[in-house]
Length: 268
Length: 263
Image 1 (spheres, each protein chain N blue to C red):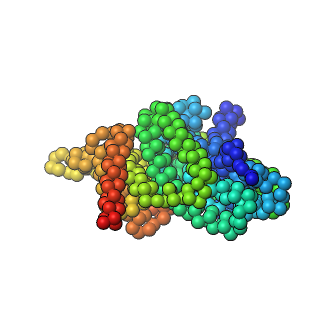
Image 2: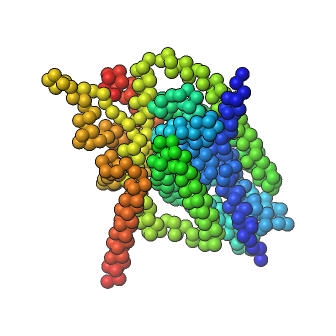
Image 3: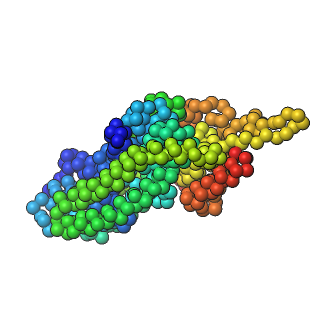
């Protein structure tokens, strides 16, 4: 009976946590990072069986791509499958491939939207709020907050994957997690609204003649809706991206043109 | 030759490397790309190296706003965030540029950086082939070397050399350029610097808002900061409360569905 101990698994997690993208290329992405992370596992399981060892290295060197931090779950699951296989269970290469490619998509979807879409922007926003006058405290809040959350999550998911095997996915894509993610996306949406109000700046120097005096348009706007122009700018970009399906680069070019024309016409 | 500046420029280049997406040394993307690679953190580090922490952080916050929604996978990038952060903030401090000018400068440097990043992705194909051969031979050491060590030499050179040179020689160039370019151009950069965060935020909204009615949450967040309290921590607490109420609400409706089925 071959059994992975905590030390092998910790190494497997650590190698994945470090080397997931270290040889990223357009066609292989995290393929060799995955193989690299399996080495401590395979060293233990296929010791004295070079044929199986070779086969295992080969089957984990194929294209692989997911959100790496939450994706540690997959590495844990695959470690448990390798352990079963080393103990005589019939698991062919096809099975490994279908488990990996079947889970990497959903994990990337959930991981990217939760980590890059919610956790990072919220923490950054808090850090930027504290640091906006040059105070380093906000930077440390971000660094410590992010590392504490993400490293414990990644470690926890790896071991969860190992202990539950393929069943580990259910908890992550089930109804309750859907409900949790919806609540988190509300949290994220509220916070980025505040982020827009804090960091998007669009004001106009236009003055409207009013008899002898002139009215500064910006002051009038601020009087009934502070930051209205900034809000309109964000909604315009969102409209182009989500409704018109414009790429980020295209919107960037539109903003450049908009700034040039606006300044030359003295509207901004 | 200004040795102090050369050493500072080199150090900034090293951090640009450590914060790159494929650098493994700070726990992969966790401590690298998503921490050291963020402009907010780069502002502190560059500020420390150049001896002006306050300006560094202020510029870091401004550049971070433009890159608030850098989505590294799936979406197309138009600017490589780590080159943008380290090159842009360093030149911003050295040339005493306005925040708007620094942000625009960063985005430009990031666009050039993206080309170098893609060069690394292409050269990595060669290391990938060697790693494949190592796997076929059952050579674990070969996989480790070709996955982590060799590609990182290329990555290191592609980051440290251009960033250090850009900072070392760019200082004079950018200072002169800012002196001679007309006021309108500076104003355009300032307007664009204020607008760029709108693009990042719109990309984030696209990721989070699945139903147009959810736009109300975005508007609420905007209005709370614009009208009521200019404090993100206060907003985060209020937002957490609202999210929790919604979570509880969604739970009770699930419950009734189950009960209905039982009946």
